[in-house]
Amino acid sequence: MDQQLISAQNLIRRNPPLIWYTKSYDQLQIESIAEAIFNYGTWQEFLQLKEILGIKNLAQIFTKLDNMSRNNLLPIYRNYFRHYFQHYA
Image (cartoon, rainbow, N blue to C red; front, side, top):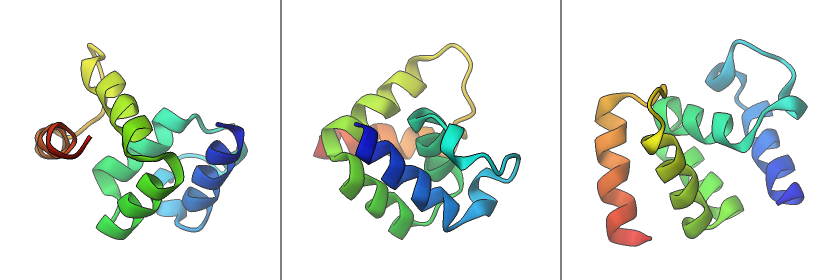
């Protein structure tokens, strides 16, 4: 997972507006990166993250975020990715 985390951090580093509140990309957790891409990323960035992590790992991260009592997933994307991962993962 270390190389995957570094690759995901580099994905954010190439598009800093996704996580505008920090420049400490090396400190970002995989959940924060995934959440930013689910909410604000392009479809291409989502596909890149899926390629980095794999569909199963990304689905697990989404499920973890989705099941948290408080999260920052926007309702429209929360609904979309629930259906997406139910179908493809």
